[in-house]
Structure formats: C-alpha cells, structure tokens
Amino acid sequence: MTIPTITDFSPASLKRIGKTPILRFPGEAGEIFSKCENYNPTGSHKDRAYLHMIENMAKAGKVREGDVLVDYTTGNGGVSLAFVARCMGFESIAVMPEGITVEREEQIRGLGAELILTPREQYVKGARETAEKIVKNNPETHRLINQSDNLDNSMAFEEAGREISGYFKSVDRTIGAFVCGIGTGGTFSGIAKVLKDDWPDIITVGVEVVDSAPIFAKRKGIPFRHNDHRLVGFGAGAIAMNTAQGLIDHVETVSYEESLKEAMNIAVRDCHLVGPSSGANMLMAKKWRKILKGGTDVVTVFFDAGYKYGNIYRTTWESSR
Image (cartoon, rainbow, N blue to C red; front, top):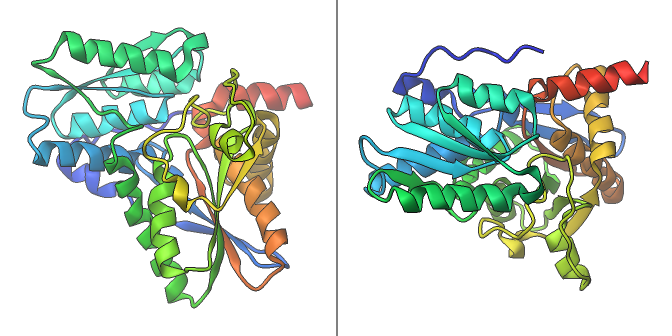
C-alpha cells in the first residue's frame, strides 16, 4: 500500500482539515454511521487536534517564529504535527515508541519532521519523558504540544461533533448512541460533549483495549495494569486529562485481534480501508445497535486510513490464504 504524497504545504492547505464525510452502514435494527476522519490530509483524526492546538498556542504567544514544536505520539499525532507545523512554518520533532508501524515512521520523516524512537517496552510513557526532556534542555526554542493534557485537543473535536449533529438534523434522524475509542480521550470528549447537548438521552460508550483499560478498571474497582499491545492509539497506560470521564456512560473493552479482523472485514465487505482502531469502534457500534433494539442510530468514528498498516495487513492476508 502506497502512502499518499502531500506536496502542498502552504497555509491554505490546512483548510482541507475537517468537514469529513459520514459513511452509512444500513441495518435492520437502526443503522450505524461513521465519521470518516481518515479523509483528513494525512489520513487521520489527529490533523484536527494539531491544527487547533498549534493555532491556539500561536494566538496565545506560546509559540513564535523559529520555534521547534515537539510532541510524543504513537504515530498519527506525529504525522499531523509534522504536516501542520510545516504548513505554519515551524520545524518539528516527533517522539514515538519503536516498532509501531513502518508506515508511520515513513510519513513523519517524509513530511520533514525529525523522528526520535524510544524503547517499545516504555511505550507512551517513555516517549513522553523523552519529549519533555528535549524541551527542558532547549527552553528558548523548543515547545511541547502535550497532546494528552492540552485541552485544545478535545476542543478541536467539538467541531467534528457539530458536523455530525448538523448532518443528523438535516436528515431528521436521531442518535441513540455514540461509540468511540479512547487514547488521549480528545476525540471522544469533544464529540460527546456536543452530542449530549443536542441529544440529552444519547448513550455514550468509551472503548478501551483489553490490555490497557484504566477507565474500565477504575469503574470496576479492579487493579489496573498496562500490558504491551498492538492496538495503536488506544491504551497509553493512564487516563489523560483530555478524557472527560463524566461524559462516558459505558466502557467497553476489545482485543487487538478482533479489532484487526473487523477492520479487514470492513475493507472486504464495504471497500473502505481503515485501521484496527476503526475496527474496534465498529465492533462496539454493532453491539450497541443490537442493545438499542432499533428506532435510533449509532454513531462512531473511523480514526485513520488503512495504508498506515500496510505491512501488517499484507502479512495477515497472506497468512490467511
């Protein structure tokens, strides 16, 4: 799978972020609709977040010409950081655990950012500590975006929530449930806030990976343990400040294996190539469509594009023949 080439890095190209399409999946008991954030310029929802965070930091005077923007990431955020920073005239450094996906590494470097890889076993915690150290050692020129705790992350997705709400009002349909995976929590929190305002009876469902589910553990009153996993974008090992826990009605957990299988089903069945995290969202959306027993629709999110997992998909398909 080829990574699409971006050639326009003018400030005007940032206007391509957002206003993503909504895909409809018909069903007998209500329907599923997915907000396709994989249609953003770099292929993921993180374009919204980094545009909003960096623009607001610039307006507040927290970043200025000549600064180097730094952040920790599991990939998509680093790609978006590289793209948005370059369009706005900044250099950038993305710090990422090693061994996520080759495609993410290629995208980050291809967009002109410096990529620093940290030990896989330290996961996001290690990447964050390294990013913070870089900024601490270069206080005059380097600025940390801090996607987990920067509340402009979740605020960026309020716009996505308004886009979803506007669509459903225009077609006179009712949203019964909103299902969304939780990493930093920005996407879930921003969209859930808007949808709960417009549909007070909506059920919101947060999705975590079974190997690292801090919110699920907290609500069940069981010990939390972070285990290494491959569901990129989920389970950073802690509950981020961007996760508005009060907006979460239910928490579900999924495995990487079942999420990957569902993402591949979406590719074959619906001709829409998305990442495993989108498969996780679709699995839980299907579950809640059945729980609602018809009459209302379920909304979820496709976080990123399948080309970011090309080697993983290729290997999986070949081994299944």
